[in-house]
Length: 101
Image (cartoon, rainbow, N blue to C red; front, side, top):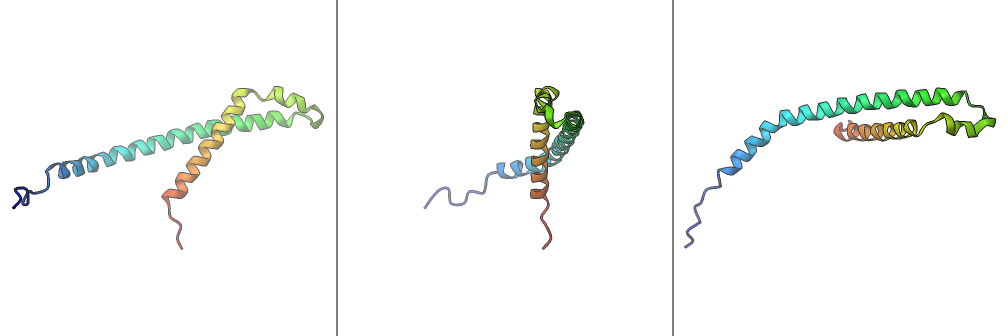
């Protein structure tokens, strides 16, 4: 006969489950705040990309070397960051919403 045969489950299971339920609103709020922040950053990156395209419109095809002078490194990096953010937001959106069949 074992002495531990009738031991009830530990009380910690219930408290951990309660803590998870209490964290859900905070996680949802953090997720919304992060999404809004990323959308604002994406909007800024899109506006920079639009300005870069407007500046490049003035460059003639014969003066391609001038295109490198028009676009700064900061602008190029912001365009790259905007692309990455848009790709990740689209991936998260598609993963969160199942498509009807």
